[in-house]
Image (cartoon, rainbow, N blue to C red; front, side, top):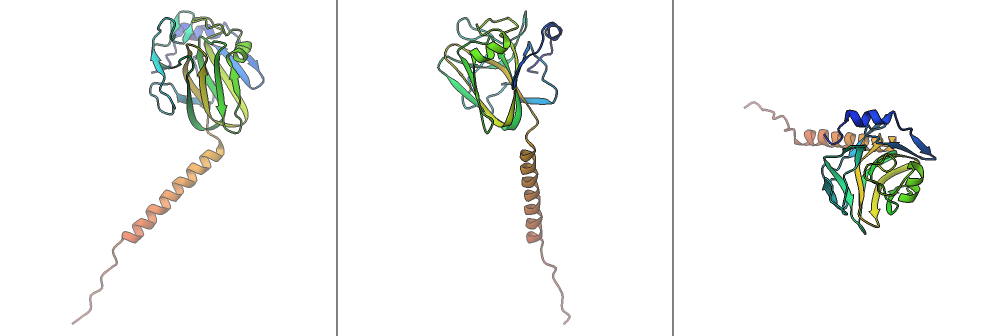
Length: 211
């Protein structure tokens, strides 16, 4: 499983307060998903990504596995955007998205697309978390940012001016009611089409006339 609820990491949660600002909150070492959120991508595959920049483990001067605690790191696959690169993750429209970022740097940037879309630089994120110096194990550079929007967003683009922008996972609240409605309409349409096809293909009864 991508997110291991390591006892040491969970224990650290009580030692660090949730740091919040308008439309954004930061949870140091926030391994557990916020209440009401579901996983959008844990990057075990490149599904939904425009560029499959995935990595495992750490490589000096290139990438660092996100930290889940002072001495606990992500041992599974994660997103790692190299310097000058970018990748977009698309998902169903939602008004809440959380992103687990590792070793946050000032030159990292994430941009949300959709009606509620807006961009956040690493410096802006660091102002909320308390650090954006790329520290590989600190609580203020490794944790979960929770974003809320007045209007729904449907994608997030990760870009970086240097090596690297590391993301453990992306989660979000349930899709917008309008999205569910469209899905139900689509399912209803499919059901109607199947019923019509069944009626069309049903053979007509054959009558017999006497001699």
